[in-house]
Length: 466
Image (cartoon, rainbow, N blue to C red; front, top):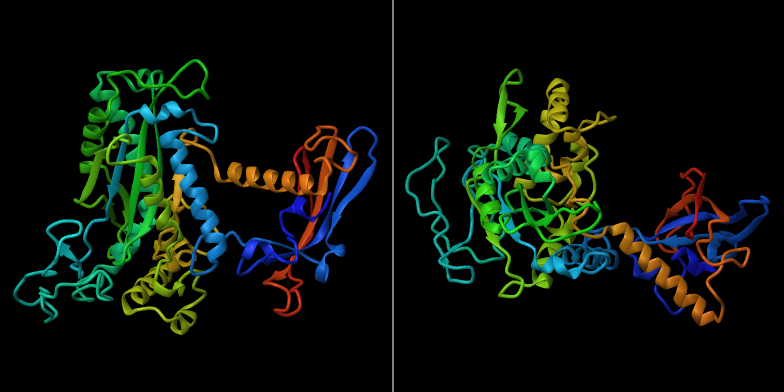
């Protein structure tokens, strides 16, 4: 076994850790143990590597943090979405003929903001907000500027005192719960719309999805969702076509009805003893996907994947958690983003409210409240991409396939077979893999001595490789 087995060390003429900007350094070793005899073979150790460490990718999804890792992440995300639309990676190609919807869900308004308005998607810009008069704080209610796409004012409130910052933060925090309620209600609505009970529907139809979150310039999260309708068979893992009656029109009509009235309860920041209803914004888009027409699986997959490498704020200043308001003061962020982060910290100062919000959002209790942990995301603590279990493949599967391919190619180039420490085929169940690795710092060699703030812990697994 050589260093390629770990997927962490590359030839000298290749970038360290695949070009990762901030690779993680590890010290330790991997042993193979014979399950029957207990014989131990050391198959890899960091001691034989340069500087006594091996380096693994940081796997950060943000382009501002690590362009190399974000590119890999985006490709994997595209593959994950595309497999559910056109098949591949363990999903049958027949899914391309299943009814599917592309849905965009937005947040409600928490105050007027600058926006680019046009007659069409690529039409000439129109006046931002043609209004007269002033707000209660003496600021103009309107804006007659025709904003370009790159205008720094886009998404910024016309009046910061009129904008409901606390409401916006609470909405972001409750978004995962609101989506779960919407997903659950959709199944009930489809059952009722087809004249069936929920139990009867589940015996015939499965609604799967993949969704990507986008942080808009106004500091609120929007969702882009692909919804696919499958049939069910005796084999729970088999993906089959749905019955004829379960078409896109039925599902789209039911989804519109659900979006109009679904709500979840959250504590009201203005009145902690009361609740406020969190709901979707009035603007949403639901359209059927015709993959053999103007849409294509690749186009939709690329559209969703592109949002995942973006930072919450321009320049990536909020790519990592904000440790304190003093820390926030050192970051170069615009006034609107700064107020959203400050609002998270101000609301978190009320421990009773912060605990109630975490409970409503389904967040497990931790050392810090969710408002503090996710203040750099303006309160949003959900995953940026999620999917149904049976929609398509997983990130772990894609990464595992890439590691197997790398090891196979390395073994072929070395003129040896892909075997374990006992000369058995890779993944032989008679071999137990024991890994003992410790964190030794971050960054490429030459960036200072490794930090010794990690702890070592043995990890035991069967089959596979390190």
